[in-house]
Image (cartoon, rainbow, N blue to C red; front, side, top):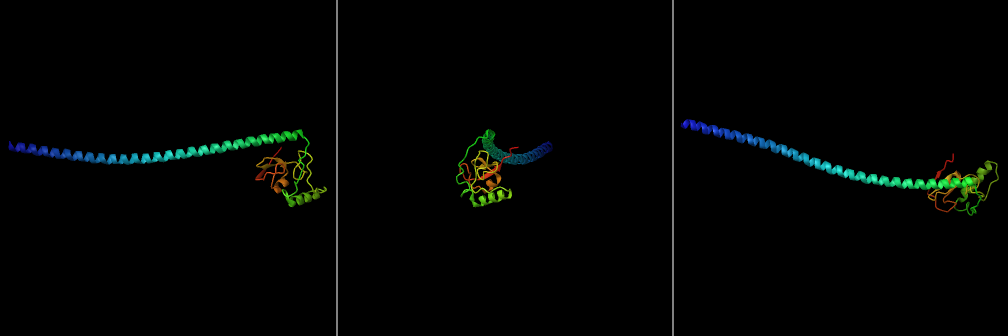
Length: 186
């Protein structure tokens, strides 16, 4: 009987050790899996934060582009309105004069006067020393050609291409020229 009890005790102890080993193996495996999942969760959190930052930046960039587009649309509408007014004025062909004071003076420079004089001599015309502005549809710089250049920032359509190159200020309002653009009427 003693031996049977001893065998039972030994068997119970082995079973206990075996169960303990199995439990510790399962716990170790579960711990590794939990650590891996924790690392994965942390990586997903960092990716989520980075994506939120990217979305926020893209939203701000989209808003900035929307503002630029609205501003450009406003400028285009103003230019369209001004161009329509100029075209209507040309269609009416009203007469009038700006007075032409100082158009060939310091605002246009002697270089422009010499250029116009040479160009008119080549065409067989008599050179005009003072620019002539007799009608609304004539260039306010030389008075010889139709105005086809829109001066910026004032948006006056008042000079021909050669005069626009020489101009430092708008002959209509004396605003300092920052740029110009040709207008195609056809």
